[in-house]
Every structure is written in C-alpha cells, then in structure tokens.
Image (cartoon, rainbow, N blue to C red; front, side, top):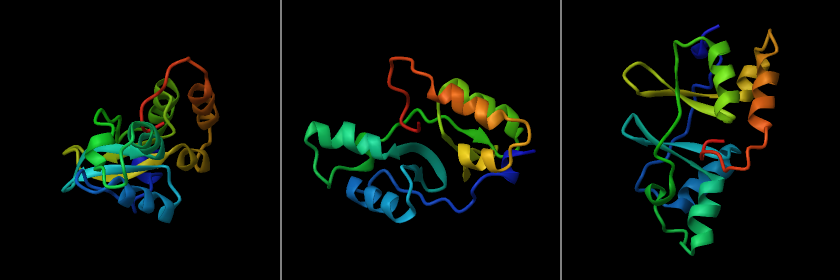
Length: 145
C-alpha cells in the first residue's frame, strides 16, 4: 500500500515567523504534539511540544519567541508514493512516530503517523516499528519523535 493511501491529508501547519504561543495553541486545538513548519507550501521544519519546552521555556524564552528559533530544521520525511511497509520499517530505525509526507517536488501533502500505519497494518510492521521507536539509546532523538 502507498503512503498516500494511509496518510492524514488535512494537516495544519505553522510558519517560521509565528510565535511559539501560536504554535502551542494550534497543537492544543488539534490535540497533536508536533506541527510541520512551512514556508509557503514548502516544508522547512517541524516544531514539537518538546521543542517548545526544552529549546524555549527551559532557556528562558517567552511566548513571543518565534517558531524559527526553536524548530527542528533537519526534518525526516517520506514521499507520498513510497511503499508504506518500507516507511514503517524506517520509522523504527530512526525512532520517530510520525513523518511529514511530501510529493516529489517536496511540497507538503500530508502526515503519516504510527497510528495511521497501525490502522492499516496487515503484516505486523507497525508493531515492529513501535518496538524500534521505543528502544532506549541513551540519546535524545530528533524533534519529530
């Protein structure tokens, strides 16, 4: 099955110049811990609730700090036309629970979560990915974890 068949298409995005307060409110509204950061329709980063806590609040930044100041720029992503089984295995390897989905022009078209994969899992690969994601490495993983 292709990623495009499983992904969530209705994705809310924030922008680099938005405040972290705006990003946090959006996360609360949609009950999500991570939001893609877009410049136009181009994916330029991800911001998570953890980014806000660790990179902003813990460093004394206020609610007016910008998303750009604390977002993760090195974003892992997958393509809409990729095989979902391959992406699921990759999630476990890189220890992430969700990935932005882009088209071949790298325009954001959706987001794929471990939950999306579990709902369509016919071969147990979502469980294997969760095992990989949950393994303790002693290091902090990327912001989209």
